[in-house]
Amino acid sequence: MTTAAKLIEKGKLEGKIEGKIEGLKEAIEIGLELKYGDEGQRLFEQIKAVSLLEKLEAIKEAVKISKNMEEIEKLL
Image (cartoon, rainbow, N blue to C red; front, side, top):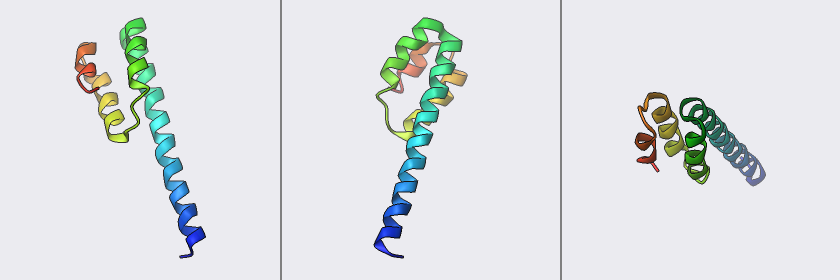
């Protein structure tokens, strides 16, 4: 594989990861808004700074099963 082809593949992978991160953030924002209203939106302001895919996936799952926002805040 040429250097150019390797760079193209690396760029595609980075783009997929970035897209997944943005999608997770959107899902989290919607979930927090539906479940916790304005308070959820305030919490999302902190979550927007998170850029680790694994952490965002954990937060998304926590939004689904949490009984209160403190359970989600513990992940930050």
